[in-house]
Length: 392
Image (cartoon, rainbow, N blue to C red):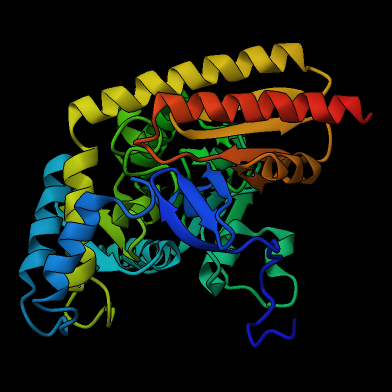
């Protein structure tokens, strides 16, 4: 097919006409269990009735209005976020990359206002993913993302995952912040242990630099807490989020403290569509549902069940599966065969998942997935292992 779409994605031939709950349905009526969730976006499944109701109600009132005016829905969502987190202030945008861009600007502006004009460098982790803008790919530094787009932006220093001694050595009088994903998603579902996050907080305090958490993928219940940092005993200075916060409707946010916000003045940042009434109304309902303690307890219980069963499958099929990684419903299977082969076989058997670095399969079910659907997914994974072994 001669498509008019720029070929920036390697797309499957599959196409869907409808989604409901944990399932996607093709034109001919075939159902697929969707454990990709739009890459951790459809946090409450497809066509959630609660979100449809909110969206329809707001759509009859107002879709968009300029940020030159007061937006009550934006104020309500910001208040909800600051009540539930470390933050005092929120900036709204439309995507994860935009929220990361906001975090970078905020960190630099904070040091500028403190008369530390030479501080602009940000230390990041090799293999991390912070988005596709020029600043975001400069922060990530991944070869597959930066080739063809050089020169990159100055001021980003990548350090190997887990090398805390090197992180400290890389801090100099130009360092403004450390930016890290609590769990590297695209980087292979690599969990940063709580003690390491706590060590980074101490290091940042000692060196008078900022700690930025990129929770675009880990946030909004994905790991079993509202935000992943809440598993630890520390708080970041700045946090970027997007994906699951809108339950499928585009919205991003950058959270920060009053202290860090002092560098941002009138005109220092903005977004035409950021914080529009439609997005904020939906996101507020998403937060109301997911932040409920019972909801998060249920996520953890179902995730624990699922992880334990995956470990059992790994034990039986250890010629195919090396490791089960992750937390909550941000999970990965590190394969001993090419992960793309495994993903295709799973798809043929009716389960949709996506790949990640280090030969990992990402498993990202909706947070409200039923135990019944988890059991169906486990049967598909086991059947796929049997199918692959039968053909080897």
